[in-house]
Image 1: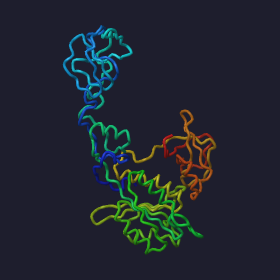
Image 2: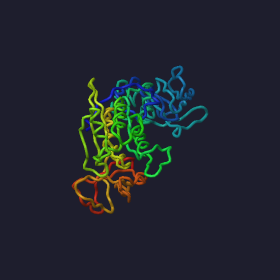
Image 3: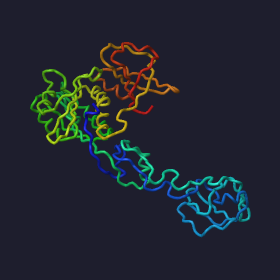
Image 4: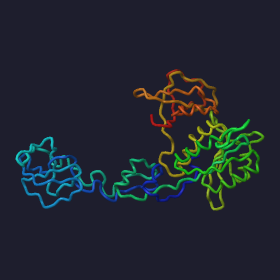
Length: 390
């Protein structure tokens, strides 16, 4: 599916708006880091060839100072961390190893270049710094700032329209009446979309009639991606598939042998200008919605931005109590994974029903059980999708 979603364009954003975005071009250093030779320690700057010895103290140089007149032989400068090195001095002796007496300093032997940060030793001009496809972290921002990058080339953020369906749904601001439910999924989806680098655009709740849904889908197709929740199954009041067909959305995938999340659909609407709009039909149960998003939509949104690693990390985990299931569908268990030395231990939540939203609160992983598996013995290992670092 990832190869079927379109790739978006690029834009430049201010440095302070680049966190979490996907880099659209390689960053190449246009200035050296550090920009000048400087001291890595508080101490005394000298010529290494004159060590060991006793030196006149010719002055003090601190961070932000500019070296002055040339330093004569037999002279040391008191220097502080980050201060620029005078061109004729090549070594710094730590102050802990110095003995000061009567205006002179005695220093032991030290190798040439000791405690000196050389110009460009971190990054040289022309050196590749960050590769395209990288999601920008706070650490990347610090490097970009040091290199003087004020506008960062990033992939265009996918604009994602979200449509909820169902006569039973009401907005969170409405007190639900008999038979009504708050549309909770939309709030989780908005956060998940933004976490994946997109911008979410909830269009509201479509009622369980074909005309209402078709009108909202027609509006949604102006965005880069369309997500619907609910109504994707085959019940008498499930109109999503018919509405998508009316909007010329070509189905590519319908139903997945997984639990939760079986009633999932994916299609593409081909525009007259050659554009492709991915349309994802998510199940109505809130847990199913979130699991399907993690498995399919998050990777798709990141792939649209050219992310080098669109998938969340997977790792082997042990299930102390094992697990039993029927063959035929892959299971994704909400679980809390904890580290025990070099091992990861998964504790599945006791409530695994697709409407049990409380199971998401204590969940930091989805434990994968293959479709053909019927029993995982106690203590055996399987893979888990890590939703958070463990």
